[in-house]
Length: 291
Length: 291
DNA sequence: CGAATAGTGTCTGTAAGACACTATTCC
DNA sequence: GGAATAGTGTCTTACAGACACTATTCG
Image 1 (tube, each protein chain N blue to C red):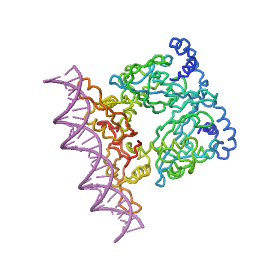
Image 2: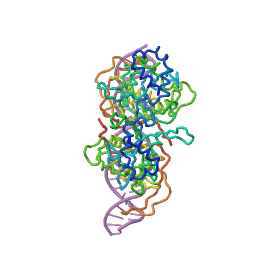
Image 3: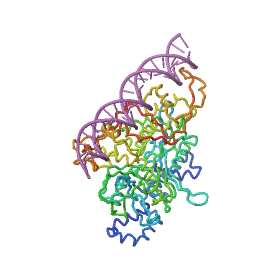
Image 4: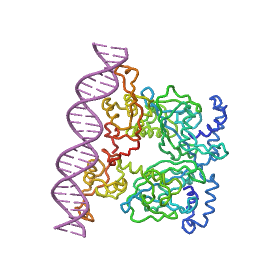
């Protein structure tokens, strides 16, 4: 519906609203819509990424430190403009949104970051969310297994994994004046990303994106416990995971050693072929169920 | 992260990648980012709306007929550009994305359309999805109760409720060359909207957005049956709905008459205060559960 | 009256959670 | 040996779905 701009111009003059008039000047309006894109109100399109991982038994998010104002020195989600690169053949090769998100992640967190999953989260376009101009940001959500080292940004002032609990945001919405305050509306984007992640663990096999294969059922349980922030019953969790068809499949191997604090060696698994978990692993006691 | 455009320019010259260089010319880059928005690659931002209702016991979607090329005479989802209107005080009053979606709906379907629910669906930004220029479209999903008459568009060539089954798209993806082919990637957007709607009926009280209050349990069941395309067991459905706290609440009244083909008068209900259904009303036999 | 519908009762299979228990391994 | 963990068994409760049944209303 890109020609709606022409229609919107027509709407401002009441006479143009009649069906008879709408085809008379259609050629001109089409010309405007087709060949003068800069006549449109400038709206910048960016992508921002909520990249989550589990480090030190904590849920952590990748943040970069802003070098420029506004929000200079504040921490923000990695992200940036969707590009229109000149392609190898001289044509304008354009980036898909997901590609742009993956690129920003690689640029700002280093290419060592291997993301197991990248999905679109939500789009944020409230006027004034960027003080300089109208910016519509398409947010993505990424999951990564535990990375061996903190990320040194290759294209950002600084990049770090930060425990989400250190950011002082409650389940939904930001608590004011606590620790680090994120730039723009990134606290809200992060909160939405966290809620999405928590919900997706219930009915999708995404927990496996947080661990490296092969993994044990206990490692998988730690993912759930960390993301949900609740202790789960080890025995029941174990039985439940194995009862979901396609969630995990056995490798036949065992861990080399038992647990650090004792216990037998555990069987090893890799992710199965299920795209949806059935039955789902529901979060315990959700009486809240917003009324 | 709107200043990423400056960064992206810097990234093209390798020297600028070093942290030392990044603060030297920061003032200039900030100037560019702040005051020359038209220097950015032009990306148009539109909103498109998947507006669903139930008419004649069928799930129908609101479509408008395109008056201009490309896709002239094809049907498309209502939508259009996000505007930057001059406000009453001379300031530029900008539209929020949801406001833009609601406005397009009113303009193209008439203000009589009262939407009970409007939520963001997904954003579509693949290069080439509009043949004229780069267009990123934020899609919204709307639910409306049965409207008394077909909508005559106030700002579109033609607007109509169209049964989704007449559009020849399967559960996901479009079947080629069947009946009416939608413009752009709107068939995919519609398919995504349908899947979202079907899923949301399971765990949210959104079915009530398709009926007018007060309603009977049977009317509510028809919503589920129509959206899911499956017959449900009347007795079990009845008991289940009433067992979910806050889903519906009784008005104490009865229908004036029994069913058209016989049966006793039914109790009337209105929507309750639940935001989430617990337990959820899951779709029957979903063995597919994509493997 | 016959057919269709509103609403309830009952039974079965499945799943969730609580609890208990054994076997294995670390320290 | 003591403590912690892997994995299994069992019991209770809750819920989904199948089926049966009554009562009410339309034609």
